[in-house]
Length: 342
Image (cartoon, rainbow, N blue to C red; front, side, top):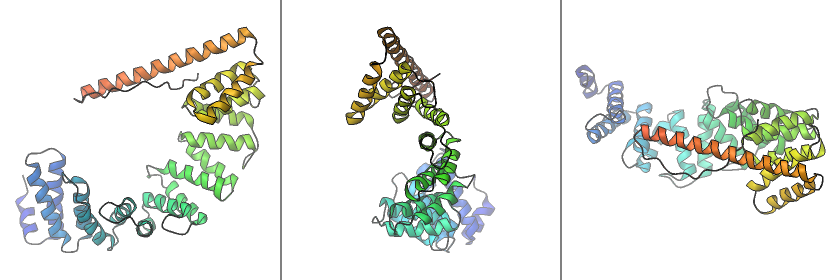
């Protein structure tokens, strides 16, 4: 039931009341209340009343309505209202308008315009805009490539504790320092931050720095620790590195049986030239194993693959049961062996 006082205020031209009415009707639709189509039309009607009076938040919400909440999105209308709000300084509208230029949704793809609007939102502290602006500078997308500016904006996003993608910003900052700015000490700092949040790529990159002594004191044991973490999540590069470590006795006690185990698992997941390299390394290791040792190593690989497949099948069954409980038709999936390292 709509509050009559609020309705009267809206009819009298009160911007806040109009915007509130639009929000009420929009939420009715989202909550599955009756007259969905009627509510959607009324939401747009009241948003537009407030938007036409220059209310930037109503303009953004009207853009969002056309962008996401109508049965069939009208991106051109969404872009019109986002632009009106963006020009008044609404950071959310600036970010979404930049996205639309990036994606070509309702607008012609224009990376320069995307970067411009990301910058406007980034300056207001919107972390996802800072992240995207950093990417633009790192890759010369709509702006001249500038790694220093990319690092500046990645750091802004990475240091925001409320940013959901902060870990990815930390990883990208580490990669930028490692491969672009060649500041390995800073790369190690940011890879560690991302690794502490269980980022797979950060595990591998941090392990590489320890293995090569770049930005940190060379420590093969630490390298193996991080490679093992990455391998536990199925990273084939880390599997190869673990195989190499055991074959050479770097950071671990030399064990050709363990080297064979990791290299064989890596080869099973690889294709093309990389697979041939892993297989060749495994063959070299085999030449150092007695027949009995090789037989045990092969059994270990088979046990591991069976165990990983079983875990994956259980995960799929659990997911299917959860979907059935939610009233959805389960989607058949092919089991793929994961990795289990104890």
